[in-house]
Length: 196
Length: 295
Image 1 (cartoon, each protein chain N blue to C red):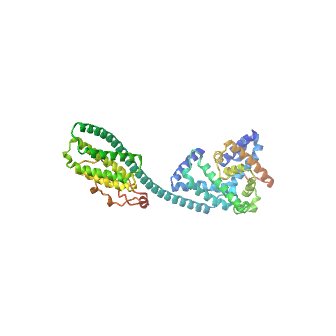
Image 2: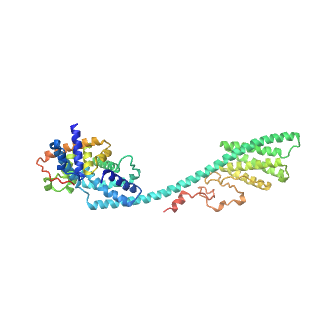
Image 3: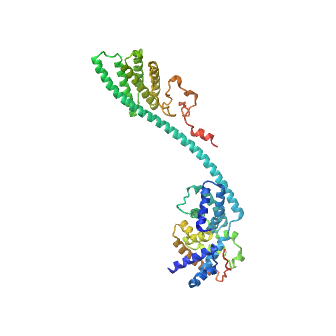
């Protein structure tokens, strides 16, 4: 579907959801829950946190959807701002509790196991570990673009930046990720390329 | 500049890949001049995107979340409808109360204006009467009508300025009215000018006492209601039609005054919505009663 077509579809669904239409709410959930989950997983590295926070994000959406206005941002940008705030809030709580990053612990549940980590595919934990060392803006772009699957335009609106700026940040992030992951696994072999 | 261009191309190739429009190789073939530079970054980007893309939430988590989400939405929707009903009842109640207050205030403002004009005319008329009296036979009612008008004007001024009216002034007015009634005897036997003067005086007094009974606190308001009753009886005995006034608002001070004569007051049959149970009017549906009837 073209971006315009998707935007139109989103608009119909979101407007119906705002009016309390149960099927529209369900569709909205289907469309966005996996993306929100992936975004949070990319930011926290913990599947349990990703599950809980993704559910929490949708509860916040219910509370705030009546105040959502199309002229301010696309729905996706609005939604991922809520997700971003949920992640930040979670981090603050963890900091207050003195909990360190549970990256390895959390990802062990979802990753493909130690054997697969040495295979051609980059494991999620590798990427997460590398991304964790990136500056915040680069981490955010990586999570929004690659985990949540937002377009550059949507990412820009979510972050309050220009599209050109997002592309530059994305490029820098990829360069750094490649450097870091290349150091970790210099003998990587890329899998056969097949367009999704 | 070069980095910016590379960033643009990298994003374009990545988008083409994730949207299924081109493979990595196809994209690289489009940019042969920067292929060597582009390829490692593009492959890294694609692998990052693929890896994240494969980390989907477990099915049971997604379904559990959906049920909670939809249940919460349904609860919110019902709560919203209930709140709307409550708010609607509240708004209607407030609106009705405001409307009734406004009507009363507007009615009394008009009455005051009319009474002021009448009083001015009465003064002129009184001067003319005095003048005529000097040249002809003096009316035996003139001093009493003059007293009545003087008291009425004092009360108008005080009531209009929001100053407390003493019950003694009301009693004095009632006493003068009773005295006047006993002096008048057969109203129809009076000359036309006297009848007009008395009719205006009683009509003005009726409006004045309504205002006082509805705006002044106790013990003035009850006194005003007694005086009002006397005024209505006098008007009835003289055959005078009294002006119409709006019904009193619930909760207003002294609001149990009815525009109809005491014998025709239908008030006591209806329970009062006011806290002190003093206002037996069939007023608007209160928020509470509306809430009770809502689903």
